[in-house]
Image 1 (cartoon, rainbow, N blue to C red):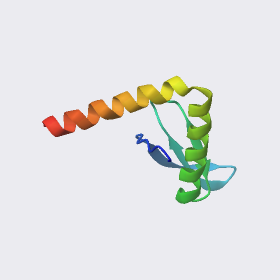
Image 2 (image 1 turned 90 degrees about the vertical axis):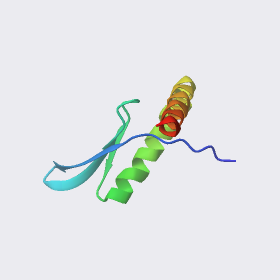
Image 3 (image 1 turned 120 degrees about the vertical axis):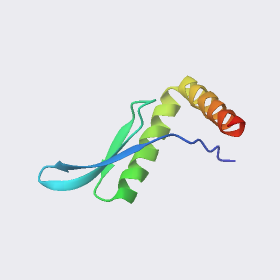
Image 4 (image 1 turned 135 degrees about the vertical axis):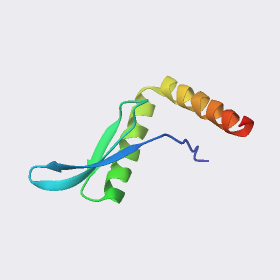
Length: 77
């Protein structure tokens, strides 16, 4: 079964080599990627984040713990 993980992302448009691209990044991990379309940028980001979390599995636990803390905080509000 695929485990789902939520992360906050920032999306911005930039010009790279004379053309517009979309850049997606996550501050908690420092992972970023880009694409010609928003969909491509998000897909590339997912792949990069997956590789990052495979290389640093302890980071997944930190993100899961943060996500659980946020969910509890939202419920208590």
